[in-house]
Image (cartoon, rainbow, N blue to C red):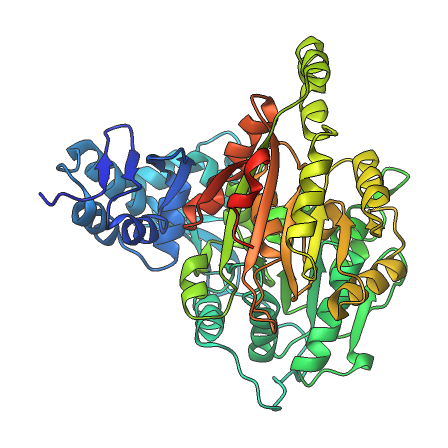
Length: 549
């Protein structure tokens, strides 16, 4: 057995020795099917999960490929129980198939009679299967395609959905021929998506997820509904589609709190879809307003819970999820898998960086000591107050000032969670602030001034986490965040990753109050980026001179 960087344990955890010369190669291959759980200095812990194995299988990886990865890098023999379990778990994917009979009716089939009998007798599945056709086939209620897939995943028998999709109303969409083309990985993502039918494409922030969406639209050539996180994102999608495709302004509609347009390509916000009037979703008619042939979910890891229910009823329409991370803090990755579709393409961040398509980035955790008075207040506070006290510690202001001075002349984002902290930072630095209360038109003006360099420092809330294109930002200073959110950490670093005309690399700072829950949450936040190969240099607030200017 080779002296590799991995130790595979019988509880399906995998330990990675960070200092080993093969550690990065092992991390890259392991991330295909395992999830990072803990990432302290020397040994990182991964877990092999059912959903990770099924996503890998849907993306074309076989159980033997995954076992070969473990055997290649492991110090010791793979426990026999792990090998058997992996083969059996991967083998469950596709044992059940949803398809259509000659009359076009939905049916659930399996060559494994006991498995089919087991799921058909399950309490939550039996009502979805109105009758048995033969030993290997059940009829499926016409409305139940999504609900059936959700329940089957929960039972541990993910179905392969081969029931096909409505083509929608044809609409001509081509990529613009003005000297640009899809990068190889973007074209491969589009190809994999259509081979699989529906599913999720995972790409780093700044790697061109919108262009993958445009490529899918140009391939499908059909009416398209695009769901996005906010109105600023909707307008960025519109501008990018106008620049990159043959679509004109007359063909693209915005459906948001401000505007209600329905066009062959309609861009709507999640917020408008989930808004209620008199207890009812007021804008559900949008989902049937046109015969959509493609539904694109931007930032699919942020899909609000009500949209899952709506998506369960859209299973006849081709669905493309775009995201930088499949991590969801609410644990509903299984619903993304069953209702949007499995992962169809995943490009590791460092791989895209090595190709020069995203900027190199250095990550720093700057630890700040609370003064004795703040420390006493923290110690005497209730658990639910401690994070806010630590995250908004006034002691962080001097560190922010020092970092802004160190990177003078660069485009700097200062990111906070709490509005009073954002206001304090804005006043202290003489920099404009941008929060959820900032009107959309004003947000667009501020972002544009930041892009052109008219504004060098911008203090923002979490509204800038997602789908905001700020290509020349080179520094982000995270002062506070959403507790231990891994997805937020990834998105915030992502604001810096577009390659810079200036040639500067990116610097991402997280300010943490030492020996508090702020520090505990920071460790969890960093897990996803550690999985992507980023490491954090820990600095003391008194020793910022150690950071290269």
